[in-house]
Amino acid sequence: MASIPMEQGLLLAGVLFAIGLTGVLVRRNIIFVLLSLEVMLNAAGLAFIVAGYRWGQPDGQVLFLFVLTMAAAEVSVGLALVLQLHRVFKTLDVDVASRMRG
Picture 1 (tube, rainbow, N blue to C red):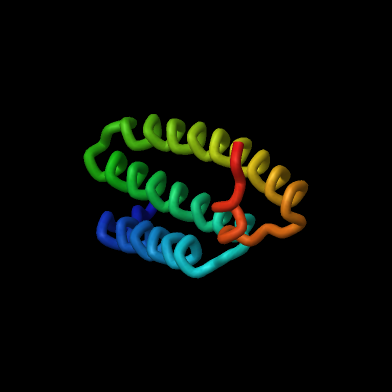
Picture 2: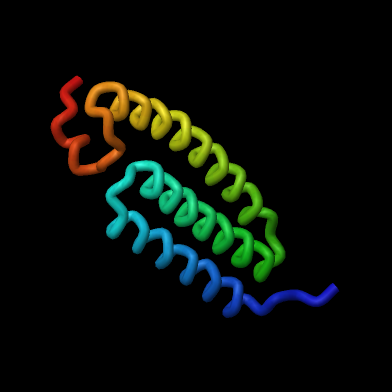
């Protein structure tokens, strides 16, 4: 089985992270912002797996499980925020969320 060089795996993770960061900074729709955060989390998980494979340790895979757990928590909290924002303000614009009081 052919392996991917560490440099290319980390380059892919960096590109994915940059794409996610661009989406977080540019988009105003909260659903797209949450999707961009998911891309960033997956890029970090990919970097952990590539680094763990390079050193022959399963630590990268274990950390990726923590990243997946954190992503699941982020999705549940994000969905609650999306539903509350849409119920109160009838929009999914991130700028409107600054007016939410709890």
